[in-house]
Image: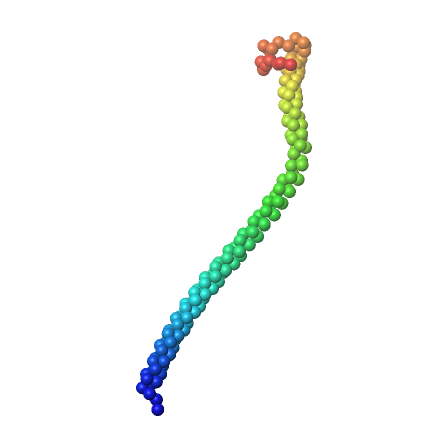
Length: 151
């Protein structure tokens, strides 16, 4: 049969194996927990990443809409610029026309003034002539209108 020393040695060996198994089971549990913690961290990171991606997509969409609005505004402004440029081609002609109109208006005012003076003088001469006075001998004091004429 077996001796007491063999049984004690077998028991010590079993005890050491049991301790080794407990140690290995604790190590496996710790590694499982570490893996679970990492899985949670990865899930949280993935959730944050997806939220950030969605935020960036929303920003991109908003910016694309702003670009469309700005492009529309730019096109509208370009059309306005084209219209202004086509109008500005006529500016020298319009300025010349305005100068000519001002010049003509100034002439017309002088001609009207001269015509009024001449007409008034002619009316006075006609009145004096019909009163029997000669055109060269008009007496200004005898006329109903005491006017002076400057030529």
